[in-house]
Image 1: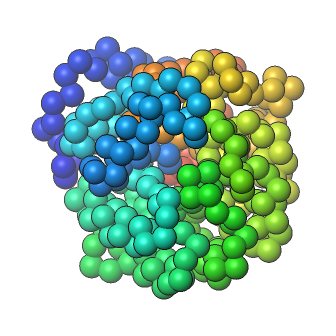
Image 2: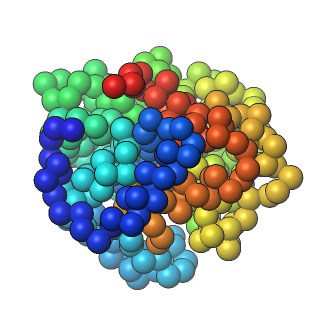
Length: 311
């Protein structure tokens, strides 16, 4: 693929690249679509990594970063894994950040054609204007293909009246929103299914993607997906050894993953994960839901949602 990262050094990951290739080969996958990866301005990312290193209060445990590499190397690694499309999930923790982050993300998508242009938001004066601008696009990379909302880090209520017209705008434009709304790894004032349920009651056509499968309130968020046809869930960190240790997925709910197999999307949290990328894929495989389910989750559902055409 063209763009940055093609010639970057990805030495030291050869065994893992081969393991991902074998996973794709045995499951019949043409590639991967990962809706939950993080790229952001370097000085912001360094602060995020420092927070993980400190096991801060929203983390609550030791959390080593597996892919602490330069941006071009991280892009090259995803390409080597066969990821056909991914995101630059980024999020503000205070007013005045979101519009600047959106500008950076537009530039990143323009120079990185396999990245779905990502944008974010915050309940603040002017939010409707910059969200509309991101959706409508401009000279760089067209409009935003996906948004990120982080209720835990941003510490805001999705039902804040300043966001109401924004959710309506995104629903009308059919732009998906990945929302960290579950209470893992640590609860926030506005996390959990209740605020999201109220939001969806007002905006039932919002293409909401529940990050981390709603961890740890898995069943409650599966209920919302069953109730609202446009609700999807991403697999980020779910079912991995790391997450099963503190937020195990209930075995009795496994059948519901099959029932909603057309609305579950691969997410990983790359590069901010404390284990190899392939472990997320193998964790999904060991659920025993079959290759057809894996093909839908790891590629087909995302390709359909974002109009990705097979090469």
